[in-house]
Length: 201
Image: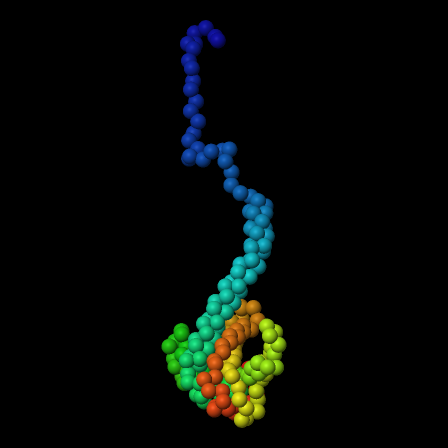
C-alpha cells in the first residue's frame, strides 16, 4: 500500500443468473435416445402379455354367452310335452336369425344389420334300457340306441350345441354342448319314430 492512498475495500457483486443453477443441465440427445430405447424394450415385453389378456377376456366372455344360450335352449326343450314335434328324433338346424340389428347404427337386419355370430343346433336320440333279466345283479349296462320306427324306448336324450365364430381376437371357434334326459311316460303305448340322422358338427 502506498502512502497517501486510503485503504478501501471493493465489493464486487456478481450479476444475477436469472434463477438458473450453473450446476444443473438438461438431457443430451444421446441420453434421450437411450431412454426412448429402454422404453421401447419395455413396451415390446409388455404388449404380448396385454394382447393375450385381451384375447382371454374376449374368449371367456363368449364362452359364458354360448353356455347361457345352450342352457336356455335345453331348458326350453325339456319343458315341452314329450311328443312335441320339436322333440322328434334327429338333428334340428339352427333357428336363430342370420342377422341382427347393428349395435352402432341401430339399423335393422333388412337395412344393413350385422351377422349373427351364434349358431344353435340340437339332436334328439332315443334309447332303450335292456330288460332286467338280461343284466346281472349290480352290473353296469349300456342303453341301446333306437333309430327304427315302431320300437318301444324309455327316454330321450337332447344334445344342444352352440357355436360362435364372432371375434378375430378370440382364440379359435367357441363351442359348447349340454345334454339332458327326458323319461318316457308311456313306453309301451307311444312307440318310436324313425331317426333321419344328421349331425350338429
